[in-house]
Length: 191
Length: 203
Image (cartoon, rainbow over all chains, first blue to last red):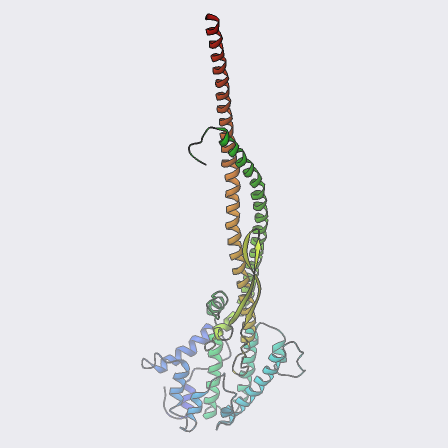
C-alpha cells in the first residue's frame, strides 16, 4: 500500500458501497487481500485494515480503533473516544439499541410514531430487518462522513462501514440453514 | 402340540377343552388387532401432519435463515431444553409415553449485544424443537404399538391357520380311531358270543 498521509491510505483502499453482490464482495476482499500480500494471507479483512491504519493513526487512538466491533460500539469507551465520528456513531448506535431494546421487550405493543426504527420493525423478515438496521447505520455514517475525505475520521468511517458490509456478507443461506437444522434436530444440543 | 398323541378319550377331552380356549381367544386377538390398527393409523397420520408442519416451518425460515450464519453467535448456548414432560399410559396392553410439555431454560438475552434476528431465531428453534420432541415421542409410541400389532396379528393367524385347524383335525382323527376301536370291540364281543354259543350247541 502507498505510504504517507491519510490521503494515500484512503485513496488506496477499495471503495465501499452498501450492496451485497458477489462482484462488490470480491472487489473489496480481493483488493484488501492483495494489499496484505503473502505475509497476510491468513489475515481477515479487518486485520488487514488495522495493519494498514496502524501506520497512520496516532498511537493513543489506535488501540480503540482496533477494538471496535459492531456488537460493542455502543459502549461508553467509544461514546467518549477521541474521534468525533466514532463518538457520534457510538451515541447513535446506543440510542438505536435502546429503542430496539424497548421494542424487543414489548414486541406486541404499537411503537410510538416517529421512532426511527418503527418502519423497519413494522414488516419484513428478520433478514430484511437486519439489512434495514444496517442501512440506517450506513446512512448515519454517510452523514457523519461529510467533510471527512482523507483524515483520521474518514478511516474510522471506513472501518465501521467495512464492519457493516462484512456482517452483511457473512449472512449465508446454506450455512444458516445448516446451523438451524442442527439446532432443531440434534437432540444433544441443549439437552 | 405334542408330536405323539395318545389316541384315547382323555386326550380327546383335553383337545376339546384346548379347542374351546382357542376359539375363545381368537375374537380377543381379532379385536386387539382392529383396535391397534386404528391407533397405529391415527398416530401415523399425526406423525405425517407433524412432519409436514416441520417442513413448512423449515421452508418459511429459509427466507431469512441466512442471518444464522453470522459469526460469533452460538445459539446452542441460548436455547437449552430443561426437561421434557411425558406421562405413561396403557393402550391395549401396551405401556406408552404421551407428550405433555417441553420446558426450556430461561436464558436472558443481552439485547445490547445480541442482534435482533436472535429473537426470531430463538422463537422458531424452540417451536421446531418442540415439534421434533413430540415427533420422537409419537414415533416411539408408534414403534411399540406396531410391535404389539404384529404380535396380535401373529397370534390371530396362528390360532386361525394353525392351532384351531390342527386341533380340529386331531379331534376328528381320534374320534374316528375311537369309533373304529369301539366297533372292533363290539365285533369281537359278537364273535366270542357266537363261538361260545356254537361250542355249547356241540356239547
